[in-house]
Length: 333
Ligand SMILES: Nc1ncnc2c1ncn2[C@@H]1O[C@H](COP(=O)(O)OP(=O)(O)OP(=O)(O)O)[C@@H](O)[C@H]1O
Ligand code: SF4
Ligand SMILES: [Mg+2]
Image (cartoon, rainbow, N blue to C red; front, side):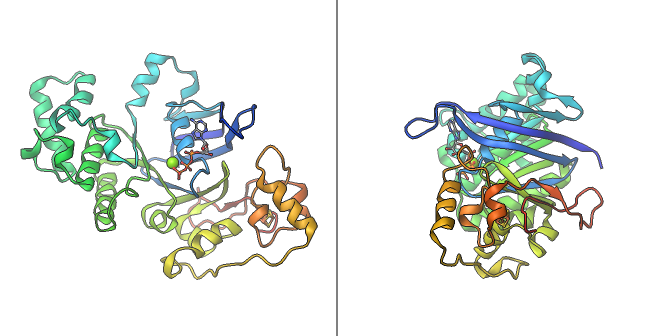
């Protein structure tokens, strides 16, 4: 299958991290490479602060990567001028977790949706029809078009945000924790809407979440991120049924009820001697200070090899789909 987006070795250093931050900046992404096929849904999962949003913003060049390459539909985005980038960016839209900050409170829904259509040069007559279609697509009555954001519930607002993203007719949608601000009862409705839209409009998704259970339900492939690196990647089915990285196992074990398909038990750290505790402390200090495995400070399997060298992501095969094997970054996998 053809990749829609191919991200190679994406590095992002955030400058000026403030008190306690290194003067060199903070390396939030440390060489992330992922590819997403057309019509695929790729789930990026990992704990808060691991770099998920940084990655999304970097590959869309909203906050460009420090180094690395993004091939979108065969075009290297880093080589584009500003005008060309603008036209490419229409094809890539992002939905953030908080619909309140995404919608202008002073704009009616009609006006919010019109903006992108005007930007695309669509005449008023045609715009009316498009707005009707977009609202219908996300399950909001056209009769509400003159209402303002505060007149809608959180779930309805997120539907409108999705409609606005779709008004640009994108082929790639980044969904950055799209339901984590919503009531649990509403989350499933939005997830179902996103699944339906993907099918109806042949969209490609990068679905970002800290919830591995949700991602395994929603996505074809999952990448597990830890401290700015992908530590495991496989089809959802394989990753959940046969997790290889100790961090993935911990994420699965933390799902109440053991997750949908996982039978992995929680692994506890044992009592350690002073040397090991010192190495664990060094590991916790982050990417700059410690040469070993970034997960060493929390890993129940770590040993001398893990202190002296950082494992790289390698394909150990085992995929049911030819194009997606099983990649893991662990000396013991
Ligand atoms: N503009 C910025 N300047 C400096 N540091 C930043 C900036 N944006 C993010 N960071 C830092 O980069 C790291 C990754 O942040 P990021 O927001 O990408 O994480 P995340 O995985 O999306 O987390 P969450 O699940 O909480 O949304 C964090 O340590 C964060 O503090
Ligand atoms: S390389 Fe070592 S420390 Fe890192 S995850 Fe694997 S076993 Fe744990
Ligand atoms: Mg984030």
